[in-house]
Each structure stands twice: as C-alpha cells, then as structure tokens.
Amino acid sequence: MKTYTYPTVLSIAGFDGSGGAGIQADIKTSSALGCYATTVLTALPIQNTTGVKSIHPIPEEVIKKQLLCMFEDIIPSAIKIGMVHSTILVNIIADFLKDYPDIPIVFDPVMVSTSGHQLIEKETIKAIKEKLFPIA
Image (cartoon, helix red, strand yellow):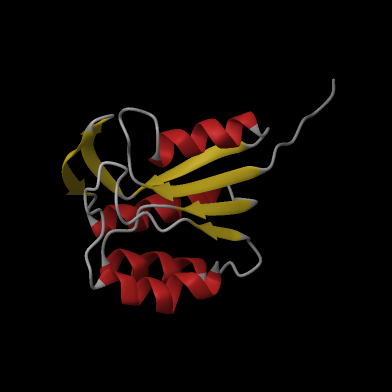
C-alpha cells in the first residue's frame, strides 16, 4: 500500500460565513493546491457578501490554546496569517511563532473588508509592522 504525505498549511485567520475570505478561503486554496489545511480562528465576523455586520473577537487565551493544540499534533509546513485585529493578538502570535523560525510565513494583513468595514484596531498597525512583518 502506498503512503501519501501532504504539506500542511496552518491558517491563522478570521471566519467568513460566505466563504469568500478568511479561514474558509484558506482551506479551499490549500486543498486545491494539494495541501492539508489546519486552522486557528482569530475572530468571528458576522458577515455575508454584502458586508460585515459586527466582529466578535475570540478570547486571547483560546487563541493560545488553539496554537498549542495544533503544534502538539501537526507541525505546519507553512503558515498563512490573515485577520489579526488587536495588538495583544499580534503579540500572542509573534511570541508563539518565534520558536519556529524555519517555518515559512505568509502574512496577508486584512485591515478593511471588501465592503469597507474596518477589521483592525488602528493601534494594531504599529505592532504588525514591528512584530509580524519581520517574521513573514
């Protein structure tokens, strides 16, 4: 019997119930490219194709636990970071990923939705520049 191995891609991103962005789009893209997708959810926007109605952040401690849980089982071949809406979340992700310098990281800083809704706190931009851009 032949054994198959697939590159694993961890998506750290928000939710998009309409499937056009966020974790749902990352899963579809990874799968289409022959990769195994894993995820860490950062936020739960209430949205559809016409726009974002509201955003509900995932508690920081839950995000830390998601990262720990994923990495204790499936070390990703690559990481894609999307919606990171707060400075504390930037710090959590950057501090965690510093222990994995050999994993390639793509950072797609989602700051405004297609419909024009602000998805990021303004003070978070400085933290992104200082902590996430250098590791991506």
